[in-house]
Image (cartoon, rainbow, N blue to C red):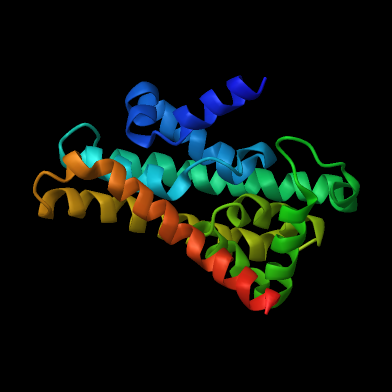
Length: 205
């Protein structure tokens, strides 16, 4: 079982190969799952979108198609997460931990929400794990859907546009970046993990 889990994680975090295997449909499914399904918290959202932009720079994808489809996937994903939280409510906080669910992730996101309010839906787009649980928490605390929808749309557009276009222009500007694409992916993952790590350290001290 552990060998299978290890193999899955190795495949998921080999982002360039993941994109080659899944193509546009795979990108859409992963973005939706990471933002809309509780089991999607481990998926590589930021690095995936930046790498998709790099692929677009060399002509593998259409930038307008990427922006449109992935933005819709991100918005629909968050909306799905909201309604999961709205329907299950506090029952989620009593759900036992499992391989793909940790109450600690829910607690951390809830504290983030209490600190930042509705802006959490926008901020969370750029923070792994938190972006998966933020819409669920918003639904669980009965945030008005109209307010949620505004933050959801704004955050979805900002997240997809900044990461995809960032990767796209980087691919145009930096020569032979594909040779070091794995270093770039690793850098994006580390950068995206810095905010929660800094927050954890501040709370610890």
